[in-house]
Each structure stands twice: as C-alpha cells, then as structure tokens.
Length: 146
Image (cartoon, rainbow, N blue to C red; front, side, top):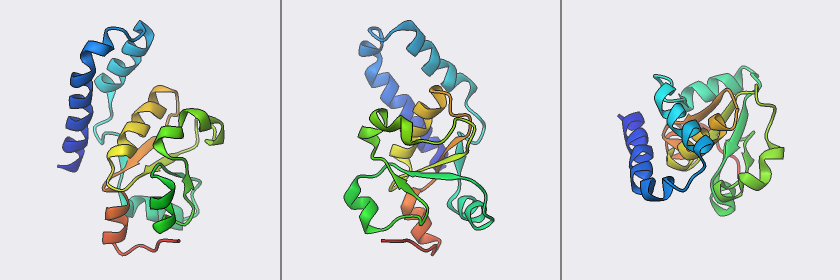
C-alpha cells in the first residue's frame, strides 16, 4: 500500500508539473517517462528490515540520508551519510560508484523516493528508497545513532 502511495505522489507531482514539463528538454522528458514506464515491480524500494539485514551482514550498501541536518542529528542509521535532498545536485561527487547499492533514507520515504528516482535516471543502477523511512526503522526497534 505504501508503495502505491509513493507512486501516486510521484505521478501527482508530475501531473501538477506538466505545464512546466513542456519547457523541459526532450532528453530529460524521455528519461523521466522511461523511468516511470520501466520501474521495477518493487518500485525500487528496500524495507527497513532488509536494509538492516544487509548492513548487519557487512554488505557494501551506501546509506544515504536525505533529511535536513537537524533531523539527521536527532537520530540516524549508524552508517548513514547525510546529504539533504536540496543539496544532492551539488554533492553527487560524494556518492559511491554507480554500481554500488544505495539505500536512500528520509523520515517517511517520500523524499527518498524523489531522490531514488533522480539517482536512477542519472545512472545509479541500484538506488532504493527505504520504505517507511526512519519512522519504520524506529518502529521496528532498530538502533539509531545521534
């Protein structure tokens, strides 16, 4: 259900932006529409439990927290790197290689979904939105670091 809400939010955002979309370069339009056409059945998501399991197993997963600095300071996934959503463009050089898995984290999963879509369009092959965000992480009782 949450995945459908996230997808609906993305589609609604695009619908609202359609008048401006006509002014967007054709290559960008095609990339966005292509992404929406071929989106994976799991909507490029990872559950909090699956992310924790992968991190606990020592898998190389880059945890990207896109919340604001004050939200990040209040509690985060131990290995997370904070790059607020509005600064992603200026900080692409801080991201790992495009073949390294990235779990994108925010408070509820919405901002992470936007960043996941952008990273996928920009060529990161395994960027995933952590469904439910930190709210879900904490609900599961997983440890956070301040």
